[in-house]
Length: 458
Image (cartoon, rainbow, N blue to C red; front, side):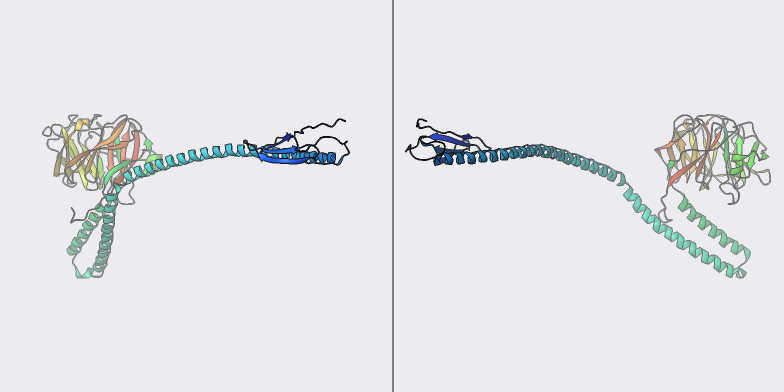
């Protein structure tokens, strides 16, 4: 083996970068040694090893040192490789986690934006609801005042009860007429209180409730709003002219489920479908005349008749559906009314309050609504409500208040289930509308907005 001088170069590439380079020893006879170590510009570790001339055989001590150094370098290389693999796995895991975190961050931003949009929508919805509720604030204030007035009514009723008790104790000290006067006064006061509590402005009409299907296309049916509590009779009149027979059913149940009835023959045929039963008598328009007749069912005689001066009749000023509906008699919380039209009012509706005993006109109001343009009409608490038609889509769209002598256009939906209404009347006792709709007897419940006023406010 010729002695020569050679450079042993070992290059190790690791995660941070480690490299061995060769240099010639200053003294060729010197043994192996690490000459220098440094870090290059790329961050790798650089070791310089000095290798002597090989003048000895493999069993030389220096050769053993070289072998040991090589083994150490190999061990370091393996360790660094393992570390590099682990680092690479960790790096890949970190990169995946970074992708997931970025995805979560994007989703979070989306959720945040969606949350902001939801908050904005909720805010707008709450604001819109507040705008809807704002007009109710003065209404609530009115209800507070009304509640106080109701308490006053309760106190008044308690006082009246005390008066009755005193009257009962002192009945021997009064004559009959004086006692009767006090009781009549008490009854009027109670009725006034009840009217204050019962009346209101129409705000809604329920879906129709079909009670029965019978009769012709036109007719009327009703109950007596002043009948005693145990009197539930139903009165039934088929047709709008050339008929005199009124059916009496004992109850609404009998009317719905049987044909058992009592027949009453009127002295004259009626005209139209505007009849009413009130306090045991029927009020109707005599056929082909402007005469109103009061017929007592108990005695079966005409107790009163009177002409309604200037009122159109015989299809002169009928409702839009025709049927000799010139004069429509109605009842509400205030009593008996007649709705008709005159030439003097250019065919527009006239409302007259009638005395139920004498049939004399107490007071009249002229309106600007043409009678022929009205589908049907009814009175509630002194206000006349008019529908815009009798067939197809129907609504209550006009109201005239006799309390203030003013009118307004309204919009209250009204389901015309059977497409042809020929009778529509309000019953203050039942708080319901009775209708004859194309051979069907129908009921509608009504919703009234109550505003109670004391006598000082009126």
